[in-house]
Amino acid sequence: MASLRDIKSRINSTKKTSQITKAMQMVSASKLNRAENSAKAFVPYMEKIQEVVASVSTGTTDITHPMLQTRPVKRTGYIVITSDRGLAGAYNSNIIRAAYQMMQKRHKSNDEFAVIAIGKIGLNFFKKRGVTVASEITGLGDQPSFADIKDIANKAVGMFADETFDEIYLYYNHFVSAIEHQVTEKKLLPLTDIATTSNKLTSYEFEPSQVDILEVLLPQYAESLIYGSLLDGKASEHAARMTAMKSATDNAKELINNLTLKYNRARQAAITQEISEIVGGAAAQQQ
Image (cartoon, rainbow, N blue to C red; front, side, top):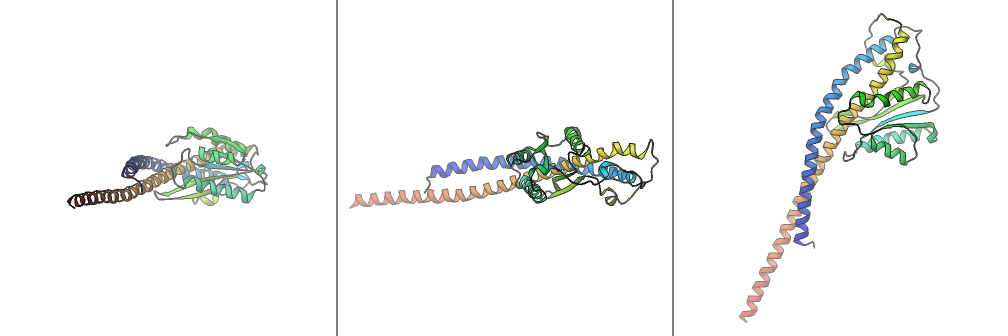
């Protein structure tokens, strides 16, 4: 049986751990509130730009653009959004598992696909397994701006334009609520479903032409999809970390209660033994 000193030491160390996890839970809750607001504030912009792109691209039947056309798939790109740090429960493992399983299912060799990694956890995972990482970005803040990911978003769109990739998929955690987030696969390029996902189309007069407008608008739209997914993923990350830290705090409290009970029982047993020895010694002297 552990000594009273050992049990007391475990109680004190567990209390310190619970204080840390409680503080991390509160910090994550604060970050979640801001990240959720950022993700929701971006939705109206995405809806409007999608409406405009749909209206421009479907305004006539003779307009074509490479980003709107499906071509034979020789190589696929995967943008996988994870976090830079752990302690977020199954947040990262769910994304990585879903993406990696789909890669293994769709492709016969690693030469048929490559990864654009956003986040250190996913980057390290794919590098260790010999998956080609075409581009990477780490060290993003808790509230990333579009400027933070503009270069990698622009590079991803450029890789489709120069036919490095013939299709690109996004993998991220979609924020539903503080306790629910869903691993989501979204086909980023080619943009084949714009018209079907927009319910209202507006008639525009174009200057100089639809083609010139789409040359600018379509890359911006694809980049915005990446940024919107990142904001969504950040909200999910903070929610997952808050939930994980709450579970850790609850488990620490339960362990402290069990150890305290064990300590009290051991202390009572030691006191009882001391009393028995005193009584026994006194009885021996009286004989």
